[in-house]
Length: 282
Image (tube, rainbow, N blue to C red; front, side):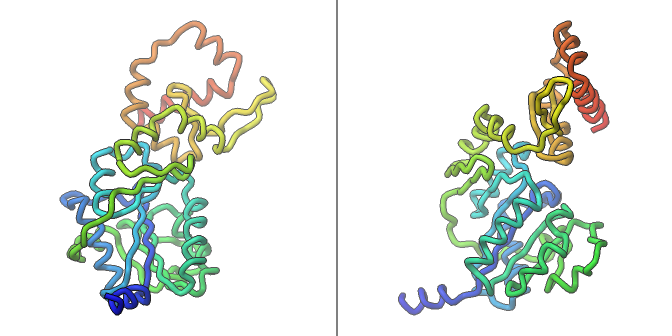
């Protein structure tokens, strides 16, 4: 047993960050098999089947179906609600490289803020892999091939790499990076993401603009129909495409006081109309 423990301690370690918003699970693929597919691809890329692969599914998880999140978490992938894109990812990678300076990292995303090769040039000791969705390719220099040791097409990765056997996973681990909250069940996690406490914390981190007319700050990306502040335009589009927003938009009855309020606040009026149009388009 001691020998096996020593071998595990010396085994190469790889950290995988999978962006659930831009690299969705292809049709016909069992969500619970994704971990095994990724692990198989990483083992091949490293050339060591005994390597330890630790995986995180990240992104804005508020609008990912709860049953899908549950299957992913039960497979042993840690869920992290982190809607700030590349800003969040760099913090995670910085922590990982500090703990495993000569380890391996893989980023799976179609968000340029996450896979921009410039972001990884400072990670000289870590070996880096990347997977993009089909049809995506970073165009800004340096060429990805000068930064990433191996690149994958996401859809091909999960179909060409048979899911390897996964030993019994620990209990689910779900993290809200915004609220610094940790949960061991997906039900508690998704309940938190819909809570007023979570939304109030979100109000405190989103970019704001100062409105001279009212001498007050206002979220730059905001849905007044749902009272939802978004971190950026992409997160606002995710919100606009959600069932929650569509339902509330249909239920909202124009009231005189609402109209008066919007007339007093042109910024809110513009935001309301923009959200309404985007919801109709989506």
